[in-house]
Picture 1 (tube, rainbow, N blue to C red):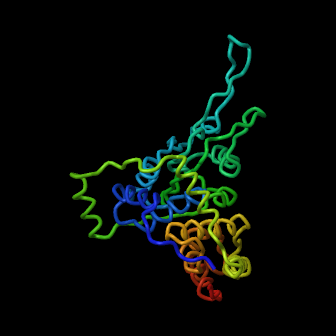
Picture 2: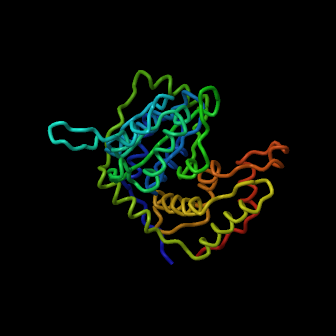
Length: 314
């Protein structure tokens, strides 16, 4: 069995420390966001206005030297604004591809639910396959490619809910929530002494860390553990739509990335438990029975965690 690495500073910790300069008191969310990036996944930040969703995304981008584009999603944003379009060149008599916003390393989709379903669906191909097709021609996006989308759960006027197919492409859904009183005071004090987030790793270093995180060892019993958890979401009478195979893969990818951040070269059950809600909460649809009982996704998934037998690892 693999042994735990000696504790040492790794570049991912430097990223976390830099992001903490901009986002105070949300260490757990920062760690999970960094883990999702290491796992090569996309992030949905679903929370009320003003708690730091956009600030978190911008800090992550800057600390990792990523080329970043930001799109404020409104009803008049078109699919071609994201994917690009072909423009006729009079001089050559040909059509030339004009890049859209997705041609970057990190796309910040601000208030994604305020644009039309047609524009939302323009992200489906690129989020899954890292490429866009315009007028029958396929264009690869830069690597790595990450979408961080924000949306507000309140104020439904002028919004379109993301369909299940779109939600399933986000590896995790995170909520920052209100800061504690102590953290809010630190935020107020920090206005006068705000530190600039610095770039601490290169894009190439991030790609190397993603590769290393993907090679983390997984014991056979843990594959079964993840399978049992997912199967329970499909059988639970409180859940109308359970976790998809893509979600199953994302659980394992996130567990590996979290193990990497914890400086282990193997996954333990705690890694799976700590990311289970973030990976699965936005993917399930509650049944009528659950709604009648006033239960939410977090309660149901926590119950599934508690009733699933945890394997003993060596």
